Length: 88
Image (cartoon, one colour):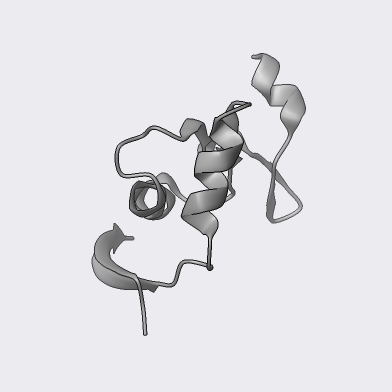
């Protein structure tokens, strides 16, 4: 059972994504956004993660900023979420 299904292009090929949303995830986003800015920082590529975040927050009311793989630093074969880059 999945909550969202969408297709992205990955290296030029269509890939179907099936995603499940954790219980109360949307309610948590709503609650947190009522008293702070919610920022999602993921090492996922924008094409995949942006669509998933649109499932969680379709009206862009709760998530203030979205940072993706292009905001990470590539170190030793891994994408690292480097908060020092946020100052750039």
